[in-house]
Amino acid sequence: MGILNTELTVVTCSKKDISGLKKTLKSLISFPSDLPKVILVLSDYSKSEIESINSEFNRLKPEIFQIEAAGIYNAQNFGLQNVRTRLIMILNGGDSILSQASTQKLVQKIGTNKWGYGSCELVNPINGAVRIYRNYPYLRFLHRLGLKFVPHPSVLVDTEQARQYGGFDLKHNISADQKMLLQFANDSRPITVVETISSFELGGASSRNPSEIVEDFANISHEIFGDFLGIKLIDKFLWRVSLLARVILRR
Image (cartoon, rainbow, N blue to C red; front, side):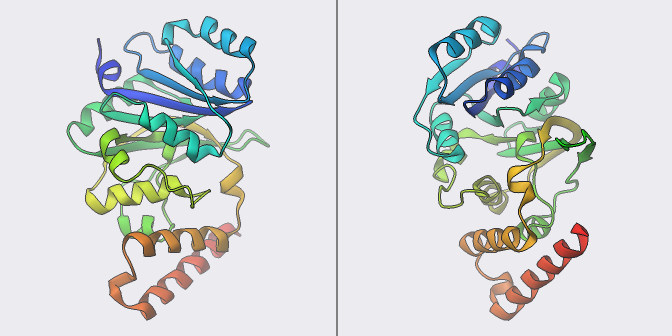
């Protein structure tokens, strides 16, 4: 058994999107060896679709759960509770792992640390344009302000630590993943690799306006850290700067 098989579980959540789900699973089954554990948390899939997935991706031996649809983070929390390996990676249906070697390198480099990530390929679904997003080196100050996010499909986190945080906070229905990663960042620095780990199709949360994104990050920051430097005036000023920076960069 290889390091992925013993150390890593990939949790994929999908609601009635078999083409997206199969895209994710095809990226995993393409690994020549050392397959990670796979947990699928599915909603609104038919019996025939489940049978098709089991048949086509039998080599992955996916553990399949069907639950009532109650939001993506509820599904991810369900998956988190069923992981038995030390590390967890969450891919939504339609995301892809791009490289077995890069994923193995990230697992090896994380070692006994609590979390780490690599680069992420961002795909524009309208024109097919691709760009590589890197957050390297990691600066918690910029992450906290929402100016440099951590690409969740390229992140591995310690399973037990994520459970201790209570999983994904369901009141943040868009940014619960970033809240969890900032909780990790509050306790330890991430291990990073420059290699591209995953591919992610833009849309959904990425189409929100700057004020909505800044408001989300401000609420998360206050919950975890309080005001910047403990001073409300400085805190308000920095969030205004963050919003202005996002508006300028969006033009």
